Image (tube, rainbow, N blue to C red; front, side):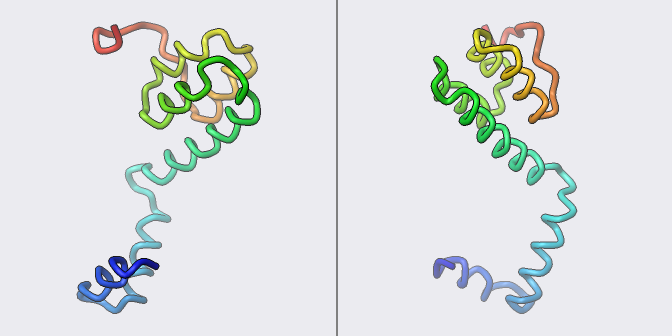
Length: 105
């Protein structure tokens, strides 16, 4: 662990062990879905890499994935085979956006 992490742990009101246990408990509950979403993105990226790493716009699509830009991701993967698009949607557990908002014009 980097020194800054040890320093942060030392500044906590609880022992390092108790603080780490608390952080693990909080992460395992994942109330806001942050860890679940991060894991889904990792799995989706691996799927995209293996299935479409040589496809046009792959790098841009990965950037859109990690930027949470489903509209851009859909646009960039529109010419990829349907089974790859379906796999991305299934991995991320979302429906592809069907309309463009002003934000994405």
